[in-house]
Length: 459
Image (cartoon, rainbow, N blue to C red):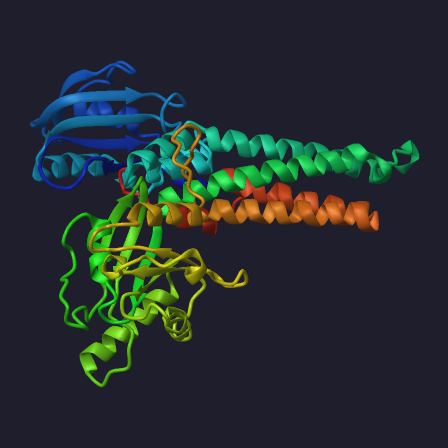
C-alpha cells in the first residue's frame, strides 16, 4: 500500500444532492501547489480563509472558505486542503474536476481514513469507529462510536496486550537462558497472571459483544401457525400498524420487514407467513420464506394461540420446532391470554431444564407482557442499558478476543497439566497476534481493503 501515500487524492466530502454547503477534500503531496493555483495563494495553516475558487483561466468557479492543514498535523498526516463552497451538485463537481486537472485523483472509499491509519494518526479500531459513527442508528450507538473513536476500546485492548507480551517475554527468556535457573513452571505468579488476563479478556469480550449488538443490531423473527397473532405482535413492537391484522388465517403471505429501536438496540423485525401445510402456491412460497428467515434469525419468537390449545400447547411447540431450523434462541410466546378466563399457572408453563427455549405469556392485542418480552430479548443478547463506558464494536473484534481468550485458556492448561513452557509461550504469541489484529498492528492487506472499502468516498 506504499503507493497510496504518493498520490494526491480528492473527493466530495458532503452528501450527494443540493445543500447549503459542499466540501471538497484534498490530501497528499500536491496540496500546497494545488492550493496556490485554485486560490491564488497558500492559506495560513489552520485558519478559515474566505477565497475565490478559480478555474484554469482564473475565472471564479465559486467562492467560500478554504482550510489548509500542513502535515503531519492533519487528519491524514499529510497536507490537507478543504474547500467549502455552495452545495449545488454542478458547482461542487466543477470544483472537484479542477483538483483532478491539477494532478489529484478520485479517492477510493475510505482512503482518507486509511491514510490516517497508515500514518499512525489513528489505529484500526478508531478508523472503523468513524464509519460506525456515520452509520449510527441510535444515541447509544453514536455514544459508543465516539468512545471508540476517542480510543477507549483501543486503550483497553493495548493494556491487555501489554500484559500478554510481558508474560511472554518472561517465559521465553526463561526458556532461552536456562542457566539463569528461573523455574517459572513452579512459579504461582505465572498462573495468577494468566488467570488475571483471562478474567480481563472475559470482561472485555462482554463489553465488546454489547457494542456489536449496538452496531449490527439483531434479527428477530416472528413465527407460528396462522392466526397466532404474529402481525398483532409486530404492530405492538413497532408502535404502529405495519402489518394487516384480520381473523382470517393466512393473511400474511410474504415476509414483512421493519427496522425498529428497542431501548436503543437496533432490531431487524420479520413477520412471517403462518406455518402450516397448504396446497396454495402463494401461501406455500410464504411458508418457505418463513422457514428461511427462522433459519438465520438471532432470536425466534414462536407464537402459540393459547386460547385455542391451552392443554396442548407443548405438543404444538414441539411440532413447530421440528420444522424450524437454525441456531437462534427460541422464545415461546403463549399469546392471546386476554381470551382466557385465567392465565396459565406456573405449573402449566413449566418446561424441562434441558430445553433450549423459554416461555412467556403475552397478549399482543392488549400489549400485556410486552415489556417482559423486551426485557427477555435484552437479557438474551446480553445488553445492559448503560451509556457510560460502552464502545461500539464489530464482529471481527469479538472473533479476535475469543481467539485470544481461547489461546490463554489453552496456555493455562499447558502450564498446569503438562508443565509445557514452550507450548505456553506459543499460545501467548497467538493471543498477542489476535489482540494486535483489533488495533491493526498485525493486519493483512486483504483485511484492510475489506474494512475501508465499506467507507464513504469522502472519508
